[in-house]
Image (cartoon, rainbow, N blue to C red; front, side, top):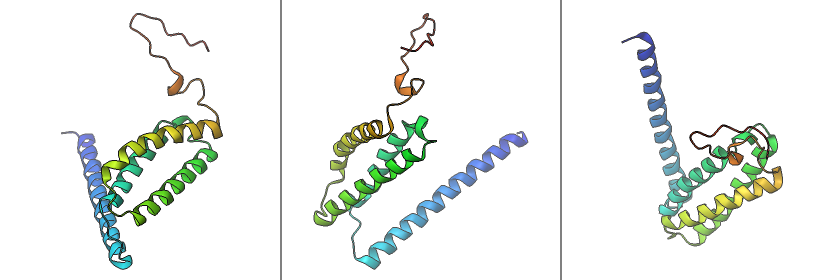
Length: 146
């Protein structure tokens, strides 16, 4: 084995160790929060955490061309705050919220957030992933603007 391969394996091992440590710390903080506040961490709260992460990963990863704009991050953080406040209110008043109910709501929210980002920041630039058309095999690439 070369040194490069050993170094890559060591980096990957440290990454996994860091992820495992961060997960354990996060779980510990959630348990401490639950014990201190008396709020039971039901499936609804766990679903909120998981589906919120998924929702914002999709929204942010599909808007890569806007990452350099501070306004983009302000809008995303504002949407995150509204999303979390709304669902915190729902989960406080309806603690038996089934985790699966997040799925259709998050799909609608992803589309809504894309529309809000387009309205507030303008549509994606012409060279972005959104506006590229697939090229069929044997066709020349046309770099001209539509």
